[in-house]
Length: 247
Figure 1: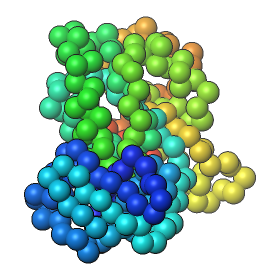
Figure 2: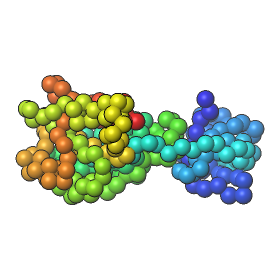
Figure 3: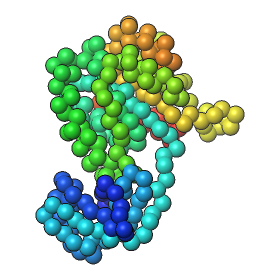
């Protein structure tokens, strides 16, 4: 399967790859004229042939336009800021699992030092999303939204289809009850959600005020089981369940 890279634009049957991706392709993958790769500008997808290789730029000729289907489901991930290595690992895996937008949360129980440091890491996070999207052969990288408090983020997601808040509280319904597979596969009378917002809290959990704000914005509490999961583990488990049920 051919590797895929993102370019800024297509112009006159040509495209150019620059920056870190060009350096990786030239030095690590040993790019040579005549090799074929897939290129995406976030809207179109092309099979392209390398025409010229230099240290900081690779020029392609467009060969054939390829199908570029949009995903059936748009997932917005509201992800509380946790320790940076775990947060960045979660960004990578969320991209591989098809998330369209990621909204970092400055939750009440997020470590304050991490929240203060987060804005300076946005460029790094964008790079992680882009590289992961290329590796997983997506049409585009997820959109990284500005950091927000949960109450504000819940309002942003208020009108976006199905809204799910992962909860560790006793009595919370299971993810299967909130996002049932049967609603898509067996009951044609139930409309498939086209958008879903998933909120995942910090390792200390949501506060009562955050639970109340989520409920007032239409979020449904759901649990992934009896075990308490780390934030990055919950990201993978919840997204896998959603993709299985609705993707």
